[in-house]
Amino acid sequence: MTAREEKFTRQTVLEVQPLAPGLFTLRTTRDQGFRFRSGQFARLGVGKADGSTVWRAYSMVSSPYDEFLDFFSIVVPGGEFTSELSRLQEGDTLLVDKQSFGFLTLDRFGDGRDLWLLATGTGVAPFISILQDFEVWERFERIILVYSAREGRELAYQPLIAELGQRDHLAEYAHKLQYIPVVTREEHPGALHGRITTLIANGELERTAGLALTPEHSRIMLCGNPQMIHDCRALLKQRDMQLSLTRRPGQVAVENYW
Ligand code: FAD
Image 1: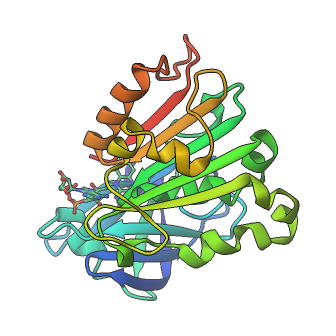
Image 2 (image 1 turned 180 degrees about the vertical axis):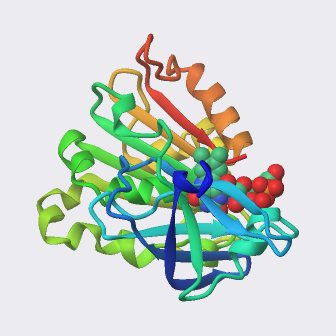
């Protein structure tokens, strides 16, 4: 056994579900020793035809208490990793690094009243994990999930988001969550239309939430498209909201997907 082999486990694909063209969800078994905080990511490995293995970062969608691991993936045309991942079927093997990684967790914030979770595309993955974990519901008074996709059919996990508040242990907290879907390329019933950055700049997001973004009360997590994250950070900075760092606590935590 090589040193590298000892760093990962082999997990079995339990289910693959196509969502929309170029998007799918994947469930695998979970090694009992694999521990993570909700919001963290795994490093996943798939074998290529030439015998080599390619590794990529993937946020867990499932909660740290689930016995399985859920992932939500894009298919990048010609993408080295996703071309292989999207070929996997039930019973196939996926490599999972034994360690979990990442700082997009509630540990970034020591305080705050309102938690804003702003995602584009597959960037919703860590937020679904966070929302399936009990801690967030206890810590925050309001939780606003803002999930942007290009088309309405690309919005994943809609039934799961809708039934979160009906889970027995979360029922008394259900009123805390407000879900604001955003669709950029078409009008979609029940969703805001436009980019998240535009909706922040023109005040529509806050009007819809019925809540202001303020340094005192808001804690904001951004995940997905690096351009969205860059532009949102600039907008939030104008309002005195900054990245939360160990040496300087702030209001904003981010995860760039590329
Ligand atoms: P790559 O060569 O890696 O990427 C090619 C190009 O595709 C990129 O330059 C970018 O323009 C685009 N791209 C890559 N990833 C995405 C994406 N997710 N959405 C839209 N465009 C993209 N991807 C997921 O699908 N789900 C996840 O949960 C996820 N979690 C991540 C967590 C972290 C911390 C990081 C850094 C990345 C994450 N990614 C996630 C991206 C993932 O690691 C790969 O980039 C993705 O699987 C594409 O791999 P590839 O080899 O096919 O293409």
